[in-house]
Length: 198
Image (cartoon, rainbow, N blue to C red; front, side, top):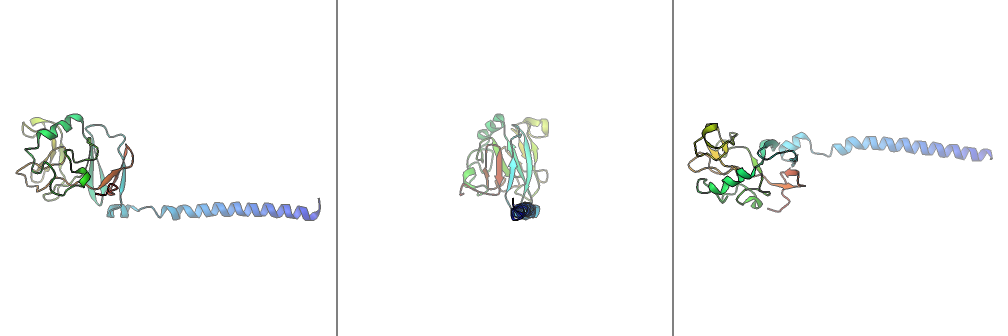
């Protein structure tokens, strides 16, 4: 092999090595750039959609996430909880959700996309307190004997059923607000984005 052939082989190795180091450097430089395109915590608080995994939320359990600086409840209602809703239609102020407090696709008896999963903003529509859960039936949890379960606002006594509907003659003027949301899969919800075109 000639001297000239050895030089070409060495140059090729140098070019390949330089290209590999340059490519690795490019990938390393791209990672922070691409991650900077994701919404920041500040942007999420300002209104960016929030993705939530509800795969481990058992029936009867409630979890709270933050969207736009507000607590959003995701509540997996048990079949027994859902059975109480038709029984309370005459006791709640807006049983058919006529007041616009929810997207059109949640204007139904359960105020939800999936009957068992309630997604609601956990702020009382009276003066902005956060209701507490009173899931046990009857007087055991400090509620009236005919209590079917739901939520109680500790500030002024407004009560809501398992669909977030306010009971009659309470300070809260409307049902709990339902934010726009969509299901990305059976176990993932995107809160703050409406892909159904409400």
